[in-house]
Each structure stands twice: as structure tokens, then as C-alpha cells.
Length: 142
Image 1 (cartoon, one colour):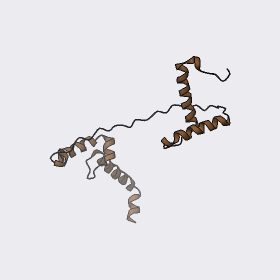
Image 2 (cartoon, helix red, strand yellow; image 1 turned 45 degrees about the vertical axis):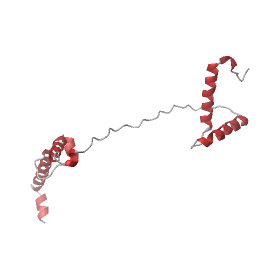
Image 3 (cartoon, rainbow, N blue to C red; image 1 turned 180 degrees about the vertical axis):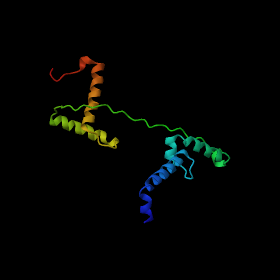
Image 4 (cartoon, rainbow, N blue to C red; image 1 turned 30 degrees about the vertical axis):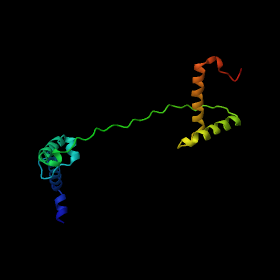
């Protein structure tokens, strides 16, 4: 019953004022409650708190003799080439040849090679051979 009386008539303004006043005290750091670290970061007071901690622990041998931390090196992200989907028509003989190449290369590999990877490698090898001696390269239409 006492609670209901407090919230009626002029009681709500008093509760709101007290709540606002306590939150302003926390925000300004003058109240009896310490502001959270997140609030301190937002208000810019985290530097003050850290400097107090540095002075407090300045004589501690664990802090004085602490080695400098090693610099953090970001891992290098490998860039994969952008591959485009294309249709290439192959005979059953071509497919068997590709599978034979995969089987020959497989013992040294931990992951199974794909047919596309074998074809890309073959194209790179053929390009090198053509650039080295274009006169000896043969075209299918010839």
C-alpha cells in the first residue's frame, strides 16, 4: 500500500528525479558506484582508470620485469585466382587420360586433385611450350 502511494500524484517525479540523479552521478564518476569499463570507454575516462592502475602496480616486480610482448603478425591471406565456368567438350578417352594423370600424381598429394585442376595445369604447360617454340605447336584443325 505504501508503494502505491509513492507512485501516485507527485511520487513519480521524485522517483524519476532520483533515478536520473543516480545515473548522472555514475556517469560523472561522483557517485558511490563505479562506472563500468564500457561506460568509461564511451565517456573517455578509461585512460584515467588505466593511469591509476599503472601507478598502483608500478613497483610490482611481476610488472617491472615483464618482457615486451612479441609483435602480432597478421596471417597472410592467399589470393586465389578468379575462375570462370566454361564448357569444354572432352571424349571418354580424354577423361580417362585425365584420371590417369590424377592417379599418377595422387601418391604425393594429401587431397584428391580435380579434373579442372589437371586441365588448368596442362593449359599452363602447353602455353609455355607454345611460347617457347610456336612453329612446332599443332592445332586440332590442321
